Amino acid sequence: MVFSSLPIEEIRGELMEALRVPSPRILLKAPTGSGKSTGVPPMMDDAGLGDRGLIVVVQPRRMAARLLARHVARLRGVELGKEVGYAVRFERYISSRTRIAYVTDGMLERWLTEWPSLEGVSAVVFDEFHERSLSGDLSLGRVLDLQEGPRRDLAVVVMSATLEISGLREYMGGSCRVLEAQGRQYPVEVVYRAPRLVSDGRGRVAPPPIWEQAADVVREAVREDDCGDVLVFMPGVYEIRKTVELLAGKPWMSGRDVFPLYGSLAPEQQNCAVERGDIPRAIVSTNVAETSLTIEGVRTVVDSGLVRRSGWDPYRGMDTLHLVKISKASAAQRAGRAGRVAPGRCFRLWSEAEQARKEDFDPPECFRVDLAGAVLNLAAWGVTVPENFRWLDVPAPW
Image 1 (tube, rainbow, N blue to C red):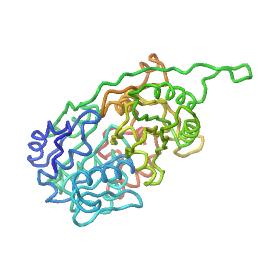
Image 2: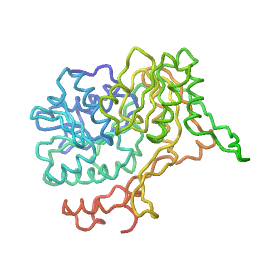
Image 3: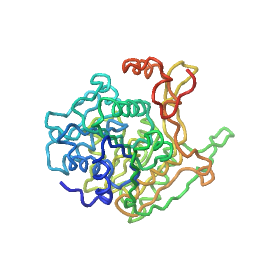
Image 4: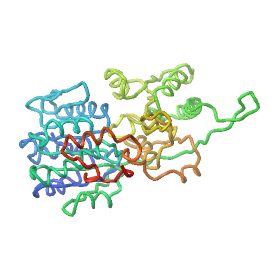
């Protein structure tokens, strides 16, 4: 199957050439919607890597791994779990015939403990690496060590739409080949809608709840004939449910379906949200829809600018989810969802001045969470002194 319609096809020749060198290391940067997640692994299979072993494609989220595997299997006209499969927690659709497997970074971390040399694997592709999960950082370091040691035949590819190329290229070594695709992104008009302050009835003023802000903007958006499907980003399940309830009860949403989308949702419900139907829809999602997935039909994005992110809580003495503002990189990823299939609009529920003050990138997870589990995992890999591990960003002093 040739993915001739994908913009990533522009670099097919360069990718094939880069894969032919001994111990290939490739750093690939391409815009959202260019087809990295669905196009690069089949190209690697075409280069013969699938004949030598499993091409493992690492995703930061279970839902992305599951849906991407289903999509690529459908494009290649094969049964899921045969030539193309996936493995996530509690689910495994991989057989002896599988050539391309989409897995979570946590699953790869586990495989590296159970099969230290990754026997039967010919290539590891780290997709959406800009999210910088702790499991992703640990796994990349371990895989690079393997490639320099007993697995010199292993191919390593790191790719994303928003990567800080210079530091990562230095980390991966002088033999790393940097490829960049221009992609095909339709223009997206960005509209800022800072919340208005309203009285709470007790002499104080505050912005309305974020779901009410989003509903106001959705009402404005659906009045336009070219609105398309609407994707609303909310920070968590609670806000999603409030938004869905609010939208579903509005008369101006008649004739439009409303779907929630988040990681713990049943796979059947996730499929209903992402697969395009005959009726226009609004999808209210966490940041699971921020990367990897193309939800066809979306031409309008409403971005709350918030996310629930794991981090150490000194008062509880454990990792917990914190409500925080997203970075400029995340905002760009979310806006890009509106320009994948046609020109679109992105409504941001904050001011242009606040946008200028945002951090460029989200901090790596290794700076935010308890590292006790990581230390134990490193010990299982034979790294008894954590400081000696091949960190991309070294955590705070132990």
